[in-house]
Length: 245
Image (cartoon, rainbow, N blue to C red; front, side, top):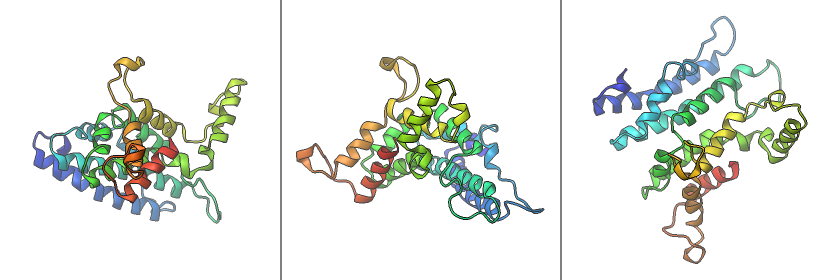
């Protein structure tokens, strides 16, 4: 209720507090993921309750602090839900690889909600093109949270995607080969082509691709089309986003 308030100060307080609540929720859900004292995370309810939709609407707030806190909260929600899913689905005594970086039902639903509510659109582009290094870095971190499993999970490789496409063409369908990454692939596509109308000429949201490329080119110098130099850390983050896309 505080995030829907007309008071900027109350919205600022609510969005700033949310990240700390998510961190503690993740800790409890991972530590008490099984047994009689199992803790059930509240992040899975953030879609049905409209929490993700409200936070996405605050990405376009006039107050810079509200925008920053809302972005950080959404990033934390995606990462925390994914980590909780991995902890809950880990088989007792199983060693080695287990769903590393793979999407689950809950975090996929959150990614879908962020995409459908414009979280990958113009507001994210404005963060990426900001001259403020910390703001651009925040934008890259948020974008990375939406697509990072495409890099960390071997199932997100081009070879696997080609296999799934071949299976669909042969009539097997993608559903039978669902790897938990469909929502992340959709987010990557939206980051590239924007969202809104199917008509490219009247899309409501801009592509984030030019902004990410510009950050990466900033380290190549003027002769390669670079402009103001960005930090190496920011260039690496942008490069990882482009690799996932």
